[in-house]
Image (cartoon, rainbow, N blue to C red; front, side):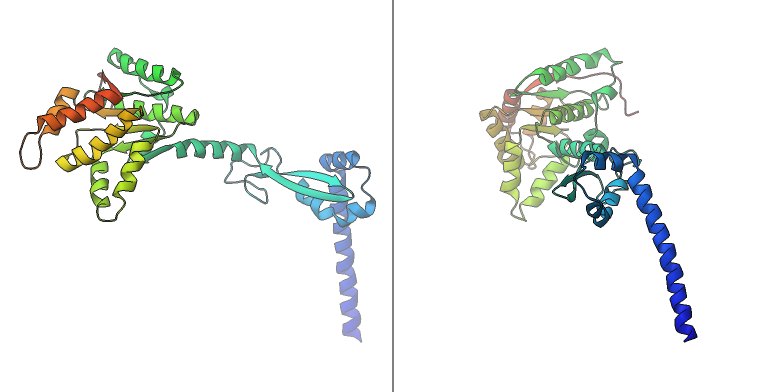
Length: 307
């Protein structure tokens, strides 16, 4: 009998400790200002209602409401990361609902804007470009920046810019900042690094996605072609891919923004050579004319900031 009595006494001691701990936690919970305020606003809740639903009161009390206990979204302490609880009562029932917290809403908005700026092979610093970081120390850059700001003041953009000039003056960064500003207005853009774009299109011939990709470039609200002229283009790419995209966007009044180290006259010469060593001035001229239709040439000079 002694082992049974010993076990019983041990159980009673542990039960007493549990009851003391439980009653202490319960009183601490009910004494907290936010729970007292909630219960004061719902005098219809009986002691039995409260007793049987203490776990819901604890669920609400133990979580952050305004990110006050969360250093960041990744370190959110709540049951569901990025969501804050709201407590309700009706007919003796306590309910907990959840809504996005301020940090979650901010992160979702940033992700939404990022999703509007799509890219192919563009570096992270370009996709995060900001007008606050644009250098204004070179007067030669003012005209390009002024033109970009004019575009941002328009309700509808139907014609882009052809920014041309030497390496490192910030042509690509400027258009990255433009794309992010357009995202704030819910305008989608697609940023393409031309040498990789050529390789992407060539590889698409074998996996049957060519027409799908070309159609995407045709229809995106704002198309940005970076470093046009830097890549070697076959006659097929120039005429059937680039020409088709520019023709469609010209007809639909959809803007295209370009960066290039070549003026349009130099680009025309560059585009006129094919892989057989022949010169096709008329076909190259047709492409350049379409570029003029969808964009306005603007020279951009200044200090090389890559050095």
